[in-house]
Every structure is written in C-alpha cells, then in structure tokens.
Length: 421
Length: 112
Image (cartoon, rainbow over all chains, first blue to last red; front, side):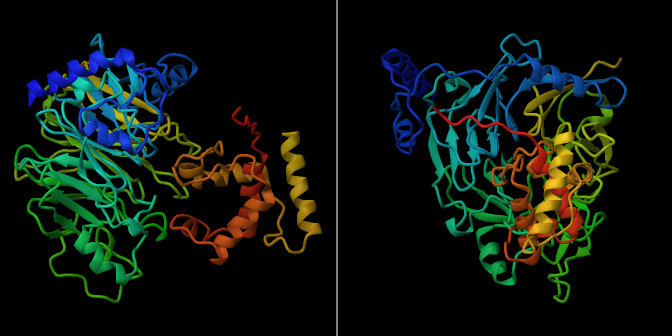
C-alpha cells in the first residue's frame, strides 16, 4: 500500500505543473481522486494569515484565561470556524473540521509549538458540515460529514497538494436517511476504536423527538452511536438513548468508550444536567428521551415507563454548559494527577439567562475506571457581562503532551502546556 | 448613541401608526443589548451568524425582527431552537431585541 501511494504521489508531482485553470470543487472530483486521478485544482492553496489584528486580539483575550498553577496557554493557530481536531499520528499535520464546508490542515513546520501554516485540506472536494475528523493509528484520516463519511489514506503525506487520495466509506445519503437531515445536532464526531472499527456519533435533530420517531431512530442509531468496519461494512448500533453527543474517546486502559451528551432545552436554567457517559459494552441505553439529562424526566415522556436497563451518566455537568469534545490524557508533560484522566470542552450555554460554560474541564478516573470528581481546568472565555470571548469545542493532545483546544467563535486553536512555573 | 435613540423613537412611531404590528412596546437598544446575551451563541452579539443555519440579524429591519419573533411565539413559525427561546419573551423583550439588532450598522458590498 505504501509503495502504491508513493507511486501515485510521484505521478501527481509530475502532472501538477500542467494544471492551470482555477476550479471549484465539483461532485465528480471525489471519483477522480478515488481513481488516483488529478482534478485540475490549482496547486497553490491559499494560507490563512497567522498574524495581524485578529491574532493580537485573541492573544489579549488569552491573558484572561485562568489555569492551575504551572500551566500556560498560547495561540497555536488562527483556524476559521475550528471544530473537532485530529492530530496526525506522525506528528506532521493537525486536521480541523468545521460546521461549514472546509477542513483545515495545520502545520507547525519549525516545531516551535506554534503553527506556521494553515490551509484548506482537499480543496477539490465539496464537503458538507465536515465536523468529525479522526485518525487511525496507521495514518488514515476519516472525515464524518452531515451525511457521508470519507477516508484519506496517508493524509499527512498527501495534504500538501490539492489532490489527495480519497475514498468513500459511507456514501452520500447513507449515514442517515436523507429525510432526517437537519442542521440541528448534526456535528458528527468519529473515533477508531481499539477493535479497529469506526465509531460515529449521530445526534437526533430535535429538542425531544416525537414518539413515532423512536423505532426508526433506534434502528438507524440516530440519537446514538454507530460503529462499522473501516470500509463502512457491518454497521451496527453501538449505543442508544443519546440526545446529541459531540465528543467521545476510548479509555486506553480498559477500552471503555466515554462520551459527552447535550441535554434537553426549555426546562429552565438549572436543569437538566449535562452528561459525561461511559459505555463499556455494546447495546447500552442512556435514557433519552425518557430522561432529558441525568435523572431528570422529560415533560414529553413523563407518563411513560422508561426501559429498566437505562445507564445514567458518570458525571452530571452544569445544566446547558454544552459539553462537546473530549480526550483521554496519555501524555507525560502534565503532572501525575492528570495522566489517564479526561479533558473535555464546554462550548457554553446558548440561551441560558446567565451563560455558563466556555471552559475546559478535567475528570480524573478512579482505580475501577469510573469517574472521580470533575473540576474546572481552564476558564475565562465568558466575561462578567455574559459575553463570550471564545467558545471551546474540542481538546486534543499533541505528541509532546501539551493540549490543543479549538474555538469556533474566535476561529482559533490554543495550546496549553505545563512548565511548572 | 444618537442613532440608536433615533432608531428607538422610530420603532415607537411605527408601532403607534400601525395597529397591525403585534408587540406594540417601544424598544430600548441598551436593554436589547443585555437581553441579546441569550441570542449570541447563534446570531452573535455583533448580529453576525455563528451557525450554518442561523441568519445574520445585524441591521435587519426592526419591524421584520418583531414580526418574526412574534410569529415564533404564536407558533406560526417553528424552529427547534427559536421555538424554545421565544417562549418566555414579553412584548417589551421583543421590541428591545429588535431595536438592538436593527441598530447595528452594516455595510454591504455585492460581488463584482
């Protein structure tokens, strides 16, 4: 496979100079790339400026961020609409998804721990809500869109040019039935599990769905998590009773899948709680729509008997704080207390009277693999007047053990490191 | 600020003249700015959309904003998010929010 890719790469290098005309992404490009053909997209991919007034303003805001003693935060990259993060296993490129139409490739060429290059990834492909990005250990980048999943073998190798090897894992319109497509709760998240399968979260599109949706959603894994082979085969529903999960990661120690879940709106400022859940086997039900978050029953289903086997969250987070991306910390840079624990991002509430969230949280685990007490790790993006200066979306670990945080309001990646001072 | 006051006064005049305008209160820009905290996640405090399916509100005609919010409140228009946030809005809230977002100055440059 590696030799074949190298051959294709050389072929691409040979034909590049011949490309002339600017070309917008078209539907046919994906087929060309799957055949290792070029699309004629110009070789020069514009870069996102990394200095100037915007960078200065973001740096100024970061001076407000409070962290435990010995930790520092800095601007890593300007990345418009930055959502979920996939750090390349070779440590070359970090890919960042968006809820719009672009995926960004972020490179720190000189390894000074600040990115020097941010440009569009695979610009010849038309993406739709490419929020979910994740890597397999052997360097295959998966991108979960609104209703399609693509895979990019050797993405860290091909990303320099506009034409990258790209293949379809789940065809357009087959991740969910097209009639269920919505913009609401449609930011997918993906992970490759310890079983080498592809896991994808599928938010259900309503606040609380109507009873007639229950059976079809259960079957499709909407309002749940699905898994399939890396080729998109043998799809099965892994977890149900989830409202809208926008973050998950496997505990490398016991292989349990942990995920965040965003809970029901319109029940007041202080209920129901947000969730951090643990799925240690397939087939578990996490309680939605009978429960709107934690043990709070939804008004819509309050007269119905919930399933007997509902699993409640490991951690109840602040109501409406919008817990999104999460990662297990496996690095060595941070002190012992953080190793093996969970960092998770709170996007911040959207309509709470007094906003809450816009923080990075830390949850240590007990010896038995269950959650210990969650604490605030980084906050300060929310002003006294309730204005957001930034909204954290995802957290990811760099090879040196520092932590990246994405922010889709500021359009940036931050880096948090520990120097003990 | 002068412009804002003028905008607020305009809303009052319009509301008085047109009996059909649903919420009839006069909007207060500063109050609207405070109340827009509950709108910022999707529409921004600057009135520029932060979500793929949320519209810009900056510089929107106030009358249109009042009409839209009232239609969501009555259930004439439905949206998973909007139908939740308008539930508790008073006529005064709607007028204030419309004044604030309507008072944001914008400029447009059509593609050449």
